[in-house]
Image 1 (cartoon, one colour):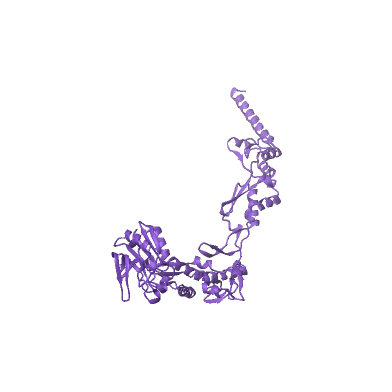
Image 2: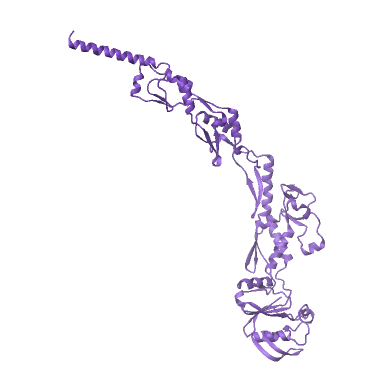
Length: 499
């Protein structure tokens, strides 16, 4: 045999030997995983299904799923709490069955890395118990509709909301666990929520609120000498009769109570003014008439206009002026000092509310006027003829004050109201009229023949003397006080006369 033939023989035998070894290795891997096989990060070459299954079970790191519901609420289903397990045998057997003993060598050139889920099992009852602990399934039940109240009045609340459906959450959570998902977003999944249904009671409440809203939505603008104030929805809602006021509003008012407040015992129900109805009804927390009209207390309407009247009384205007130095002072042209008729304005306001009028004007007595605070400045004299008292302010502070006697209103000689200024000063003078001549020590002229002076012929001042035994129109003062005032006041000082 030639040398070349020998080499060919050796080469052929080597190839046969390697082929045999390759085949033997292929059969060697039968029943186990072939060379280069990795599953879920576990090296499986030469290992049996049972061996790999046990290793995969040990390396399972799945801890559970985080579920997101509406409003971004989160809940974690803990895998260990629901007896969560995974078996891999079926999938491992399929991998082994798919192995070809004659192609194992290809693993030198191709990857055998595989990821398998395994057959997941868990206790479904424990899953239900776990999900049932989520507070979204136990939220406090609220009615579909409610009537609530804030500082602006009553308002209607529609509690239309998405109600989570437990079975839908359960089914989707179960599927997520079977697939080893780490997160499950059900925040916008329509299958997982339902809308509450409207009951006959809900429909009744929605209809009833129209009566409440009709009663409170009647704002009125009131104009007083160019200054506006408002009766608002918040005011009217305060005056709607509720159940806790029932015992208070039911009794008939006495005559004295009605004299003090003509709205006492009367109620605005729809477009009618009524007494408290004997056939009243209760809707929610409201008292109504038989037609479901809520009751608005008329005495509160009177209190509202009366309170506003009091705010605009001259003395209260003066108090505000003294606080800020700028406020307007309203002065009545009437000798009784009333700026407007409260009873009349109450009826006007009541009719405006009833008829839906949104703009009314307050009637003031003829010759009423307003004084800008700046016209008084920091030095002025106030003559309060209603209380028969004079006050002198210097640098904005009270300097002198005392009781006086003004013009005799019983004889039509009442001292006129108005803002005047001291126009002259006289010392030791005689005041003359058609039927009198009176000597005075000190005189401050205020308005034509009207002035402030001492009256030594009087031994008493103040009270109601002016109504029957008042002056001819001047402001009578005690001598000692008049001397002090005369020595302090110069010509030009403002003098406000008012009742």
